Image 1 (cartoon, rainbow, N blue to C red):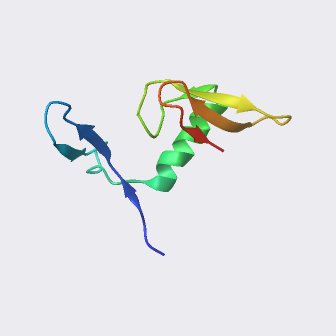
Image 2 (image 1 turned 30 degrees about the vertical axis):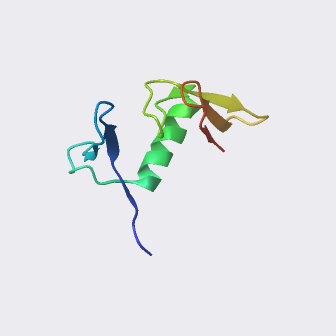
Image 3 (image 1 turned 30 degrees about the horizontal axis):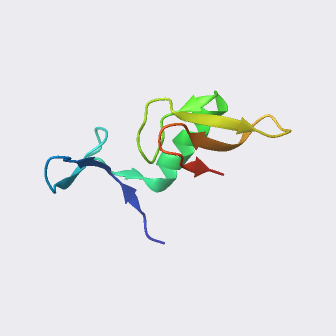
Length: 82
């Protein structure tokens, strides 16, 4: 099994540049599993940073009948986790 690494991308709106920006002290080697898991843990508290657009606290929890959120949606970019 291979490990997928996620890096934050910085888009230069004045030019054509799109460069990876390391996130964290481990050289930016945040796995996709860690990124998604962290988002779900934060959603259990009600809000989280969006793993797609990185909006601060823009991911809102959607609750089902149980004690944990069943989905989250971003108010900034419209992405959803389910």
